[in-house]
Each structure stands twice: as structure tokens, then as C-alpha cells.
Image (cartoon, rainbow, N blue to C red; front, side):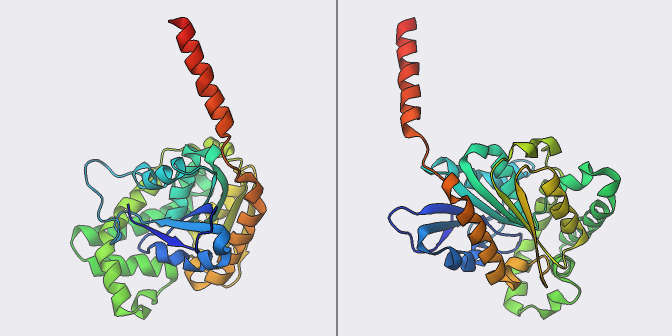
Amino acid sequence: MQIAHFSPPNSNPTLVIALHCSGAGGAQWRSLGEALGSTYQVMTPEHYGSEAAGPWSGTHAFTLADEAARTIDLIDRSERKVHLVGHSYGGGVALHVALARPGRVASLALYEPSAFHLLKAMGDQGAPAFAEIVDITHEIGQGVIVGDYTRAAAAFVDYWSGAGAWAALRPSVQAALICWVPKAPLDFRALIEEPTPVAAYADLRMPVLIMRGEHATKTTHTIAEMLPTVLPETDLVVVDGAGHMGPLTHGTVVSELIAAHIGAAEPAASYLNIGAIIAAAVTTAAATSHNR
């Protein structure tokens, strides 16, 4: 498991797990590590398709559960509750993780999470945004199918960052995205086909921060505005001047918002009640012995 670490750990750091967007890597959260400082340890599991994690195995149809497995493993090995952060695809994965381990997540901070399955659940209200994401998914997928990875990567970048964004990228960044883009259809499909019903999100009772850019796409704008209606304890913040890539283009502002959210929620990130766990184990052992 390839995981980047940011923030110099102290003797007892609180764990923050930050999930990057499609086509990027854990380094996108470096400014968050700087904003949080040494009190926190920021871990950034890499997604399939990145150079560090390698390609998806292809053993079965890919789902968000497959991507979430690394993060769930980190949570299960932590003594304390963790703070969970996600951007775009990483936000969709973070929602899946939080639902899998709701009692182990102290707070959730999401920048334009790409939870596209929610658009389907919204019916007519979400239909225009859902049609838009289906169209771009098809365009990128067709590019991958015929082997025109450059066209697929350009369509991906220009959709999320605006027309001309691909042409403005450095050649080295373009090359990295061309290598990554065969994973893009898997990400889109996993987000669209996520089976979680809307009602399940009511179980996420930790403090949640939803952020979106002032210039968000129709898809993530719709999702960001919808989530506070189904999550019990949510704040919605619009980042002035930002678009979908706000954590990169407006890194300082976004990182400070996340750090403040985590700081406010920190009392919730207490150690697990080890005594209670031991007591329960002793009680179970005693009952088993008595029943023999």
C-alpha cells in the first residue's frame, strides 16, 4: 500500500485521511498538511490508476468498495477515530468509507464530492446534471475504447476545468494524465452505479463540511447543494473564485477551511474505549465457559 504522509508527526498525532481526485495523487494535499501542523498526521492513500498504486487488478467489475478498501484498513488499524477528507472522486470514496465505518469517523470534509448516483435518485431535479455526466462519461469512454487517450484526457480536463484547460497544462502533466486516463471510465461507472440509497446518509451523524467552488460544474453544484438536505450535521461553504479544482487552485483557502472544521470536531476524535472492549471480551469468554 503506497501512502504519502504529510505533517511531521508528534508523539500522539490525530490521523487525517485525505483522498485525492481522479488523475491526481496524494501530493495534492500537501498544503492541508501544512495547515494542520504537527498535531495531525495526514495520510493520503493513492487510488488505483496512480503510479504508486498501479492499475486495477481486473478480477471483477470495479466498484467504490474496491477503492475504499485501503482507507477502511487504515481506519481499522487506528486506535482513534479519524478525520476523513475527500475531493471529487475522493469525496465519493470518502462517503462510501464513512458509511462503512460511521462510528470511526470524527469528521468529514468534502470538496465537490462526485457522488453521481445521487443525481439519479433526485429524479427530475437531478436529471439535467445526470445527463451531463452521462455524456462526458461516454465521450471519455469512447476515447479510451479506441485508444485515443489524448482525446479522452483532454475531454476529462476541459470538462472539470473549462475549455482550454488541457492545452494550458505542462507537457509533463499531460503525459501523466494520458497514462492515467484508462482508469477514468472505471471511476465514472463506480460513482454512477454506487448502490447506496439516499436514506443511508442519515446515519452519518459526524460533523460534515461540504465545499464547492463558485464556478462548480452543474453536476457537482447540484450534489453539493443536495447533500446538506440528507446529512444531519452539515455546513455548506462556497469558495469564491474557485471551480472544481479548488483544492489545487485555491489550496490555502480550502486547506484552512478543512483545518478549522477538523479543529472544531476534534473533541469527537477520542480514543476507542479499550476498557469497554476488554470488558465485553471477558464477559463473552465467561459466558462461553459457563455454557460448556
